[in-house]
Length: 188
Image 1 (tube, rainbow, N blue to C red):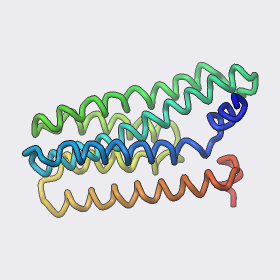
Image 2: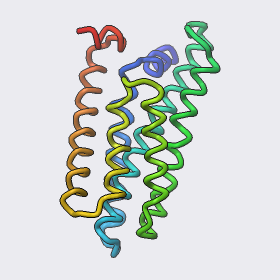
Image 3: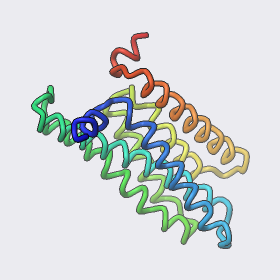
């Protein structure tokens, strides 16, 4: 049982679908919990997009930290444990702040902090490697939505964010079902 759990934790393909599913559920719970409140649509949408991004990346970053810890304990970690922990914290910290900021979005129409936090997380992901660019798309859409001045521009960012989220989820499920490592999967 413990070996199976450890294998799941260190499985490269398991965390994206888990993170996306958790983010979809958290956003769904928030959607239904605030639907009766008189919150302007723009704030409601930004809060939902923000929560989704934060939860997705918090779960993925936490999974990364757990996998590093398990591999370190098993003696199978290749590379610098310190560097891998720094990478995990670099994702988890801004993701936590993004989630924390969701209440502020619902309380006020000010989106400046949201834009800064989402830019921080998007930049962090891209700096960690261009392969992370698809994971940065939801945060970039949050930045765009937070800054938009025209309704159609806002809906464009919402649409791109939804397409990216669904695409990431489907891609994650396919990757998980393949049972391959990232390197094996990406060379096909």
